[in-house]
Length: 306
Image 1 (spheres, helix red, strand yellow):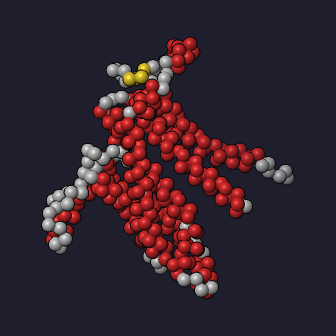
Image 2: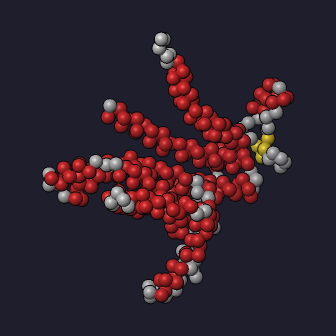
Image 3: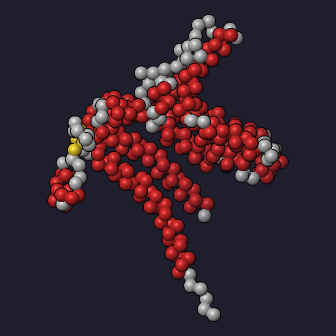
């Protein structure tokens, strides 16, 4: 009886490898190329609101002629207008500070979950995920009722005698920080919990047996082993926070400057699709840089481990 050939297995493996590339091509590269093309176009007061448009039925000559009409004027305008530069810098600052605060709050929560009895852990994980069962927009709206001058927070602080007059928190950057920290806290807790939960506890026992005090054990053993979770959580919080639109629009004031709000205004208020696409392309490039750095660090770490 002839032995079965390995060719079908090889083909199935090739298909499995091919699937993520097809996914990236269909849902990342193709939309990005469309946005990039629009960013190189010029604004037109008509539908579609930009020129040139590619009409493949007109032939390859017309297509090449349309390519010559593309320009970098929108990118030059972004570089010359301080509004956009300030928006990018403000977004990066708010995202970095928010990520750091989320890490400070999320690490003790994840550590407590990982050190809790095993029977409790699924319930604790469910409690962390539970806010996702409610609409993101409703949860952010709820903070308006909490942070407004007549809201629950000012009422409580007045009731305990801590303040004499209501604080102005809503429509400030503080409200934006509160909204981002609250909304993205689970994105930090879950990867941290996954890293801490699978940590070998015999290492902690060995450090204790060797006379290492608890605080030093944490910095020498626990924290280094949880770094993959820390890095993953920071990326999961930082990347969406940079382009956040809903939270600064609802909780931030008119002086809150974030690139997500600017992008929305260019697309839907000014209807300047080419300029808005340029803003989106630059934002994507800013976000790709830390991802590439992270991948390089991961690759070097794997090479050292092997």
